Image (cartoon, rainbow over all chains, first blue to last red; front, side, top):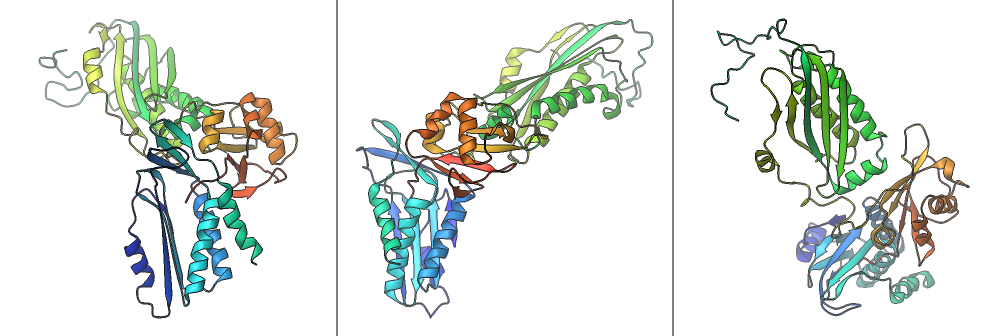
Length: 151
Length: 286
């Protein structure tokens, strides 16, 4: 299940929904990304997430499909928020359920690495010293490349 | 203007609707101006201004619709006379600050009846046509503020709308607080249109600049006729854009990604009529 939304999500509710009625799931891994109050500059007061409607959903779907082709997964939920968010607000949720923990850990990690480098979202941070668009990070690309080498 | 003691001329002594007999009224030069507006999302207004909407030249179509409507007012409003209007003019004022289009209609004739109904009908139908032309991208548009501004000639004398009342009657904007479909940031700074309009006959491409690139170039959406491209691919589109407007030189500054029909693309990706091409900076979500 993939959702792009303005509103806040509840990781517990989403995880329970993914597991409901299932007894074939042996492991569930949940990752939540939050708004930090420091980044390229200190004192981040808020951030605004822009996306490319249509392509965003398609790109997230493609990433989840790739994860499903690499690992046997019983369920995947990806929720990404857009619009204006405050420090400590949740931004992104990835929940992966599998029969075994290794698949669930790895698939969750993979989905986040690919989401950060391939899904069309852009962050603009609002700080005490002005607004700026967040730059891409080399580290994110190195993280994503790990999965190319291991196949 | 007092509302009491003014008999309604379309009701006879028994209170029944009737058409006023104007045969004995003297002819005079009659003129009326009416206006109204249609509010829309800023992104819709930008598309309208750039000619990027799927139905083509929105304002030209709405202008013709307004003129036609003025001439046919008697078919729509039961007790109006058929008039041989000597002039109908429709003007538009694209208001980015209020995210709306103001529509102003002026009607004139030498005759025995006023032409305010013609002006009001012209404004109404021009607004409805604007709605129809833009509804594919924005269903929340709101038509409002339709009123008579001035009326001259005739027995009842000249009329000019009381601005104190007018300013009180301005409807609060419902659009400004609504989320824009693509841009979730705080306002779209410096968005301007460039290039020729995309008319229905000529094959063209719909180009979008997103996020930081949109703000850096000062361009959101633009339509480019395919005939302007030296080659029918993304590289050709970049060349055509730079020829249209020097700001597109910024496409070569820093890392700029491209998607065609919402799938990642490269300079060699071929383009055909009505493709959606988006340029954007590296992604930073998660």
